[in-house]
Length: 319
Ligand code: F6P
Image (cartoon, rainbow, N blue to C red; front, side, top):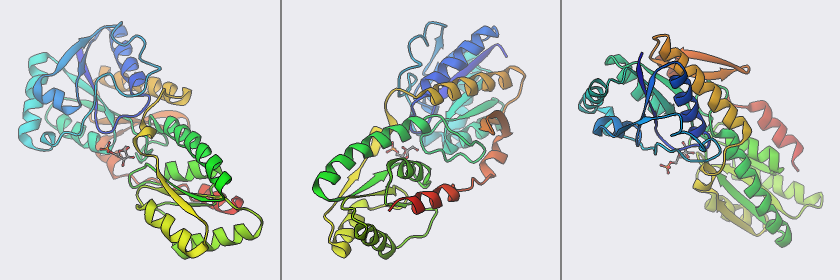
């Protein structure tokens, strides 16, 4: 391949810039041209692409967000959108594309690969919900942000003898919740993967209160929903004054941690290696600290086990 493209798609994640930088620098060092495709698949549909030089990706590794912007593109789910994207690739001479994003973005990458433009996916999402990879770019930074914020909430809930019900992101996955919960000493962690009842949550708060504790943290994954309702119920059934806080999009921002920068650099490098050796319709990921790659369809059909052991530990040591 002489010319490849790179795009970010879906929700942004800290470390995406580090991955773009790795893709650009690896491509250039192999003698390829690298095109930046703007606003996800929209950039391919609208021809919004620009040549990236070695200096285009200077001073980006430490920044959150994505210098290529990102979007979720409905048009790309239809044949017409895919054909427009293919046309842009042919016009621009783009022979392969690195797609940084989540599951939805990989479906698009598989569709485009099937139409003759080889694509390689890199898992980039704070949710860590990509089955073929133990790790996704942005996850560590998001958890550290959530941990810092919950620590701050603890100060105020301690001062007021309150219960803080904190909703963290994760879509339908509870990975951010369980890790933040254990790191912040939450009394309860509520995730979509584990059945729960408000009675059990309140019972644990009451038992903990009997040991002399007067402030509580309850971490709720967004996939469970309604932190406000849970806070109201806790106050009602336990008598502990409760407040709900939704951390929201702040978890997606900020300078990436070293783990995210390193993972993004490795994954970006390997994604380009695959394209360079003529392989497409693949996703790169991390398993047992090694970089692996899978066929996209196979990757999408895989199931990721929930961290049940960690959940159990969080439950047993927080009271
Ligand atoms: O996938 C990343 C994520 O931040 C999820 O945790 C969350 O459910 C979703 O994106 C929010 O999406 P949006 O940016 O469209 O509000």
